[in-house]
Image (cartoon, rainbow, N blue to C red; front, side, top):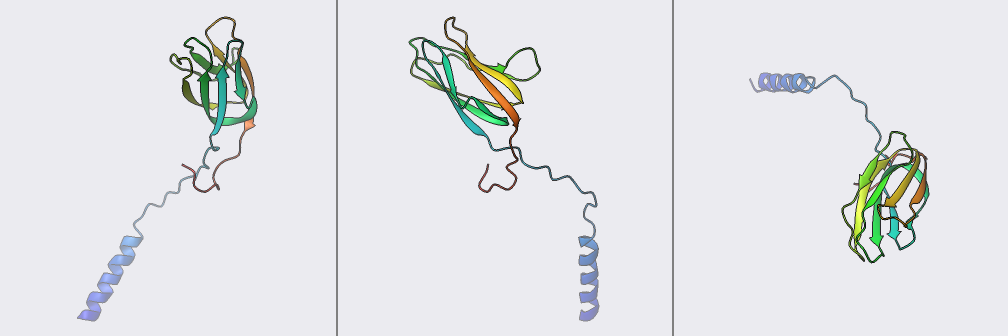
Length: 137
């Protein structure tokens, strides 16, 4: 009796184990790790570092070193399809952060005030996947 119950239980476990999904899914690699760009607004120009990097997710940290509130626009140059992000007013001496996934090409970081030159950025090929990097979000 116990032997029969054990065999039936074993058979049920084997049948239940075979009832999973048979479909497979593609294990897409992670996107590249985000990089941090720093920008400052002064009375003459917007400066960004680095000015050349690979396509992928970025975080732009901006500081306003002028005496007036400024709004930053970060986007692709020219008429090509791409991206555009904008901050609200950044008070003098304050900071703001923009996050974007940037495509290959060129981009500008500019303010709406006249007399302050924009920063031009060169964006190369997409950076490598962060698939094998540990401790990533």
